[in-house]
Length: 269
Image 1 (spheres, helix red, strand yellow):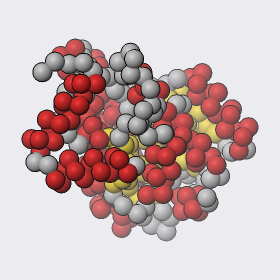
Image 2: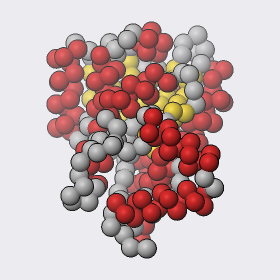
Image 3: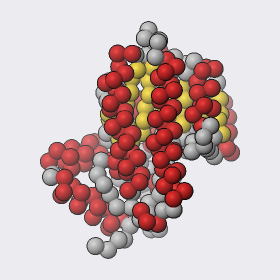
């Protein structure tokens, strides 16, 4: 339980920390004795979570009420990282809507780019520059990706595209930065029973079903950090990823995934 703290020091920044996977990450890290920099735009939920963690585990918790699409987001997070000498970053935050591409307005599309791509990339760049000379200390970064980023799927075009970016970025940095003491992991999650995922389902289908529990995804991700470039958590998700990417020709896997999404959201054709 203490391996993460021994390897990366006593502080971790969790972006998107107030609910869902971010909440599960925060609890799992606090149980391991980590102090937390919790970042989220939901101020009341963020403060409630912080109070609960401090009461339950006795950890230090800093809260940053922050819109991750804002121009100052990276610098605000980096200021907290510098003050605590934080050497571990989990970027879980994401903007997501299940809807047709043409139903997005330009502001929504810009938000995908800022929250899902620009902010994590700039944060990682600044974080690596800060710690690049500290080869005697391990540093860790986890980017949450998604199976939605593995195939182009209707209703998920900008979300899937941004998650594909995070997957490839993390894999590349895993190899590029490992000699400088950085561990980088892409966690490619499938359907996970978070409030956001359940709310995205059509009325009448809002049950967790076969979706993974957030705690299981989180524990698998924490264990994998430092050992591999990417992780697909869960046996079912591993099987889907292997079968769809290694066995089926891509045009068939695309058809299967798009038919599945169409059926779930009652699309014709």
